[in-house]
Image (cartoon, rainbow, N blue to C red; front, side):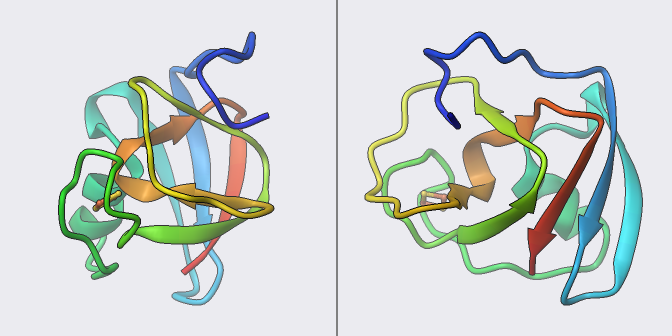
Length: 97
Ligand code: FES
C-alpha cells in the first residue's frame, strides 16, 4: 500500500508527526520528500543514496500513508518506508524517528 502503483496521491499539505523527536510539523508540497523535510526540522535521519536504493533512510510509518514519486528498490518489511523518496498521501502521517 506504499507504492506508486496504488491509487494514492500526494496531498498538498499534511501534518507530519516525528514520534521519537517529539515534533509535529506542517508539510506542504514545496517541502519535498520526507528526508529533506525532517532535515529542515533539525532531525538527522541516516541517509546515503537519497534516491530510494540503499535503504539507509528506512524508518517505520506508524500512521497514515505515503507515496513514492519514483521507483524504489530497497528491501522493505512491514510498515517500513524510505524517507528520501516518500511524500505524504494522507493529511496526517506519523513516523517513528
Ligand atoms: S538514502 Fe538510500 S534509500 Fe533513502
